[in-house]
Structures are given as C-alpha cells and as structure tokens.
Image: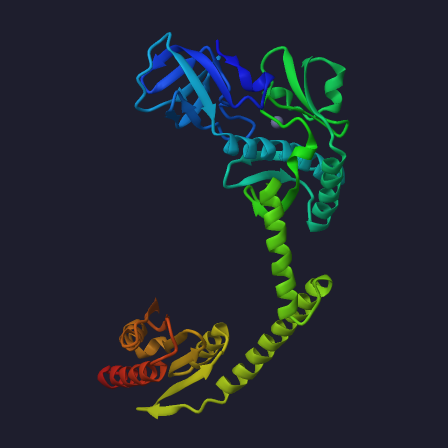
Length: 397
Ligand SMILES: [Zn+2]
C-alpha cells in the first residue's frame, strides 16, 4: 500500500520515498505526492531523482509511476518533484469545477453533472438539464462572490449512511467502501470527491465560462471554463473582441446582440428577395432551338444554388436541356436534360468544369458541380453548351 501524500497535503510538491516495487518502466513507491488522476482530473507529471515521470496511474492500493530509462531497484531512496505549475493549474481547475457546477445548479436546480474533464489544454463539464447564457451569467456572479469571500475548502470522511450526505452531491453507486470523502466549499457546496483541491476559494482568482455548446448525447451541454490567470487573460481578450465587434457593427457592446439580430434578419430578407428575383430572371430565359430541342442557358451572380437547381428541374420537364451557372466566391454549374434525350449530363459537366479545375456529379440527366473560383466561369459555360449541342447532334433522337 502506498501512502498518498497528496490527500493529506495537496500542496506537497517535493518528497522523499523508497522504491517498493519495480515493474519494468513502472515504479511503485512507499509514499507519493503524485496524483494518479481521477474525478476528471489528469494525473501529475514530474521527476523521480531527475528521471521524468511520464504517466501515473492507480492500481488497487498502489500508485504506479511510468519512468522510462530509470535505473531504480527496490529499496532505493528517491526524491520526487511534482510539475507544480501543471498540478496547481489542474488543482485550481478541479476546485473551480466544484464551485462552478454548484453555482450553476443553484440557478438551474435540475441540472445534472454528466462528465468532467480537467486537463492543461481544456477544462469543461458536460451537463444535462436547462442552461443558457443568462443562467451562466447569474452563476458566474455567485462564483465571483464566493471567490471574493475567500471561503475555506475542507474535506471530511463520513460513513456512507451518515445523514450529512443527504445535503451532499454524491453518487452512492460510485462509492466503494464504508466511508465517503466529502469536499466542502464553505457552506456553499458539499461533493463526494477523492481528488486534490486548493484550500481557499480566493486561490482560484477567477473562474470564467468560455464556451456553452451542445454535446453528445444530443441535449447535453458542454460548459468550458478557465481558472486563474488564464481566465483573466481570456476575459480581457473576449472583452476586446466584443468591443471591436460592436464597433464594426456601429453599435455599443450592450446593444451588440440586438444589432446582430437586426443584421441577420436583414440578411435573410435580402436573400429571400434575391431568390424571388432570381427565379423571375430564370423564368425569363429564352431558350435557343437545337434540332427542335430547347436549350436554356445563362450565368448569374450570387444566385442561390437551390433556386438555380429548381429552375433546371422545371425546364427539363419539357423536351429541353439546360446549362445554368451561378458565380459568387465559387462557380456552381447545373447541366440537365429531359431523360428522353439520352445526354450524359455528368460527362458534359465534368468536361466543362475540368477546364477550370472543378468537378461534380449527379444523375445522367441532372448533374451539378463547382469550381473553387468564379474565374473561367464563362469558358466553362461555353464548353458545356458546345458539348450539350454536340451530344444532341450525335444522338439519334
Ligand atoms: Zn474534487
């Protein structure tokens, strides 16, 4: 059995120990301050007498330290050093998660914690239940109050049938053994946890929610957050970005969402108008006649792709063919013909688009495709019209 120094003193960053067991690259010590991970928090990194510890894990009552290239033997004295910058960040992230979730749940009581991940590059909780940005904002205020109040964070061991647990966040099915370790944040939160935590909320500095996105399974939400100096730096960046966004929209930060909503509605109205005018312009196309078959052709700017495809579908109900293009940043081409005409529209389309670095596919009588730029669109149109004409002339219809 290893003595877990991190449990009695989460601030222990250096320690002396004796090698109890060697399992290849893995070392077991009689005592260790290396946290093996758990509760969503990643395991520690560091060194044992100068040799890097690249992985730490728990195995029954022992903690295994993966120390490639070591020359340790059972009985050796070693000096362990924890990568403290990393650990303190994770420890604050973990404590921040307790505080943040507790405050979120105080705003949205039905909220359930599904998953926690506390890693150097990302800290988040996945939750199920009702949560939106207004709730996040209210919860963040409570988090800030708790940090400003400097609430103590303490641990206590209680029996699993202790009535004290009725007021705690605990999933009894996950508790093995007779006792439960409960972490308290002042009188704000009680949660069963065997991880490492800071001793006072003031050590968190700041907890900032930086993302609220949908997660799997559908309906769950992922709440990303930052703690400490990273939270402060991110808050500053996000504030500047919102100021710049407001400036770009000719608004103020307070009116930013309203201004953005207006802009989105305006854009939708403009797109709807463009679709209507586009459909009219398409319906006004005058076909040329090739051996008694109508050929509709035209190239448009910024025309909605669906509007173009719908027009092509209408045209080929008759004994007709069409070559329709639309140009924005890209070029989109539709080549279609009435099925009775037996023209290979996919071949025609790819013949035309290959000249300008594009391609596409579809059915023999209805092909769509595109090219990465609008340059050469005219050339592709001319090639498609010529190929359609040739195909029609050479067919025996
Ligand atoms: Zn914890």
